Length: 381
Image 1 (tube, rainbow, N blue to C red):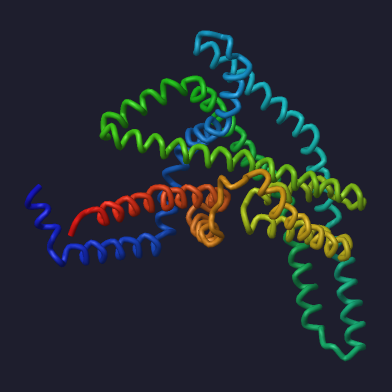
Image 2: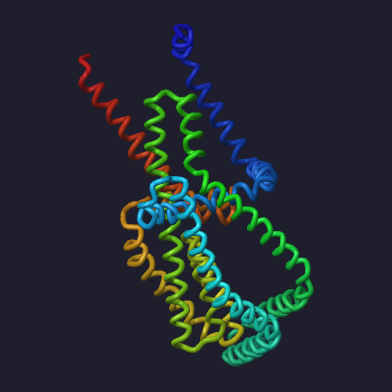
């Protein structure tokens, strides 16, 4: 230990450590594609287990709610846990049945109707672009290149959409494989939920065995805080997406526009992804509507701006409160890095990850620095 301390006092040691860290960081970011492919190959084999853990983690608050408020009179823990898991499963099955019956047929009809009528919509939009270019041409404004580019883009898109309708068999096979993996993941999630206490006790024993007791208590306190941040974000983000989707659907019903269910579902789902999600939902909805009537698309964009303003300044602050107060620059950095590394999941989990890192910085690192500064101030020189 004495030799190690003397070795660390050498002037070249911190520079060497800093240089090696910088090189490793550079290699990490320059080889993100290879790292992602390796991680993807590893997780592809374990995907049912990983999704089972994620499903169990998301459902666990509902199970604990039933356990604490409905079946609290059942004395034996295993029976109480079993009843809570069964009740939660029944509630979720009923919810998904209602969702399937209410939404899926309408979404499927809307998609098939859009594919069937896409050529008609595209032809009408091409005629409108041609008329607009002729009118502007009479005003000595040269827009022929823009009109030709728009027509070519629509022709290419029409061929792509109408030409790929024959891939239904391969798509159905992929959907079937996904459903099978989803069922396996749900079954594993039920086992994880039923054996949650045993799994937690085993993990506690492992961490107590490899950690100092003081470090263990700090780690468990840190995990509880991170768990609260993540669960709160998931629940309220889903609720926020539902509210935005419902408000969009009500607006479509009021104005009487087509594809209300399809576009509202797209808007609600894309709203789950922070910052860029609402933009993607707006672009998809506006593209569908511009084929029918360009004025629909314009009013939809204006409505989306108003809705996102309401969501950002009223709905989200009411839902999240100050528990996820994260600087905007942190959110932007984590969205970019998370999207590069983990795709859609990285974007969706950018805010809670930023909140956790922000918590580590403010409540752990800064507090430690303040304690060290106060100790140095008290120490006589």
